[in-house]
Amino acid sequence: MSPDVIRKKLVSMTTYLNDLLPYKDISFDEFTKKHYEIERLLELLVMTASDIVFHLISAGGEPVPTSYKAAFLRAGETGIISEALSKNLALGAGLRNILIHEYEEIDYSLVHKSIPIAIRDFTAFIKELS
Image (cartoon, rainbow, N blue to C red; front, side, top):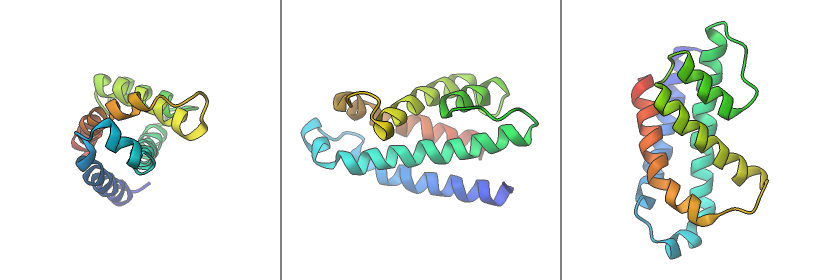
């Protein structure tokens, strides 16, 4: 993945964040009406960030991690992003897996509470990689 592709992915992430921002302080009742849209934005953020991280880890000669969570943790260990951010993003990857694969019943109150955290963490991700 060339630096230009990474930049384009970071621009896409910025767009997703801008689309998520209006939901930062959304009430739970309003969230339940828009949860599919919000879930998709969270999914896109995790997937795009992980695409970047997988590439940077691989480009550094490291073995490719087997999961999004492992990729974010490895990105912190190798200095691609800060370790604190990598741990936060690894938690977000777990939430993404629950949303996408429905491994367990979705706790929508947890998804609702994760919106401002996702905004904070993915904004930090973009800043650290820019």
